[in-house]
Image 1 (cartoon, rainbow, N blue to C red):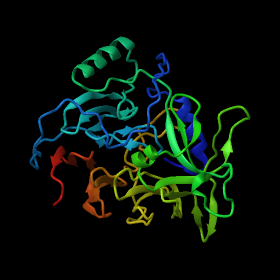
Image 2 (tube, rainbow, N blue to C red):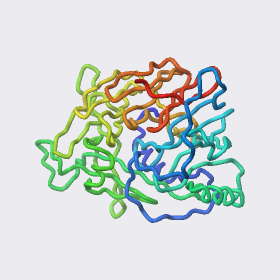
Image 3 (cartoon, rainbow, N blue to C red):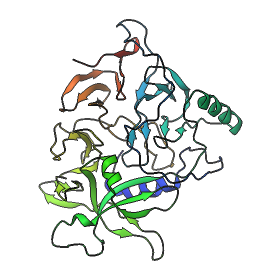
Image 4 (spheres, helix red, strand yellow):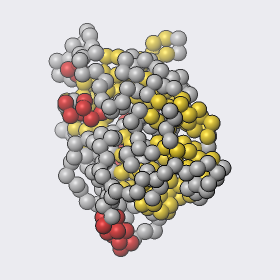
Length: 366
């Protein structure tokens, strides 16, 4: 994703206006608001036989790409355990982590999920309600989530409210930390709850912002306020811990969540991604590229297949990308599989590596 500094407010507005399924012709339904879900709290799919690693040289899964499934309503989003979204000839589908197909490659953009208890977002051009209902019935019979019927999107982001009543203007005041939370329409600025700390991790990525909105209308945070630190350095995103400390924040234009892992991804002002520890110290250089979710075309408003974010760690590992080369990072920041492969995928349960014969399930490095 590009230009987070100037695009943050637009991202919020776009999230509120966009449906989970891009099919604008579909009638909308409004689910009851749900609390944010951790990327590691996936619903249980129908049990499938455990796949053995495919020997090298044997034909593998014939997909062009295999990515994490973006899930939830946060910015950045979480990752769904137990599944991958896969592409073939420019179309996207869904498989379980063991390689079993769930949805064929027919969508224009990667498959996502509304939240860990919600629906698959699988937008197939020209698919009518009758076909969608039939496929959803098959999925339900297999114990899978159904296809999203289309509804307003939600989001959550965390910020330091410069307009918070009673804020200490002479020092950092943890009482001014806020969450902007929406479910299916205009959102609210609310205090950060214990559940949010537990779900998204401690510390949380935040940015300085003012409250905006016309009088009498719901308020929302402004775009991140950028502070020039000199020598080309900027303060945009920082991390705030539950104990009341403001941590780090140099040249971070978008901060990712720790969830329950020791490292989190952050996007540098260069546009590249790095990984930091819970003291906000960088344990990798900013050399990685985005690996999952989708970017919206700023000219047309259409979702594209371009990935938006670098993924969070899942059970101690994360697939990382440098240009067209993929590898695997562990929770110390070491590339235990160097970025030398045309594809590496990890969902927290299964590792897949691509070579000239396809995607092969592999063991984690010892």
